[in-house]
Image 1 (cartoon, one colour):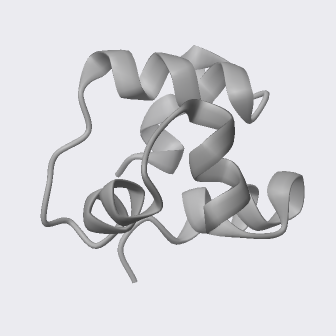
Image 2 (image 1 turned 90 degrees about the vertical axis):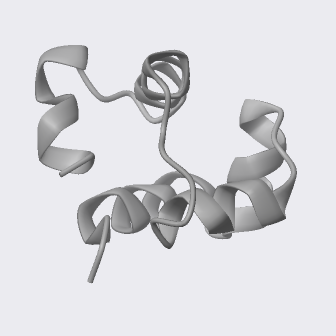
Length: 65
């Protein structure tokens, strides 16, 4: 499954993907497309998500790989 660790962290912190999407200021459909691999994450996305999910940036590759 693509981005399984990231999806798990989202559930831990926000319970739903929609709540997470709103927390980072994205439309839920955009986040869904990114989590499905249809749209790539940008560096800015990764930085914002790491801050929002309390992930050290040095560990980002674990979640975005």
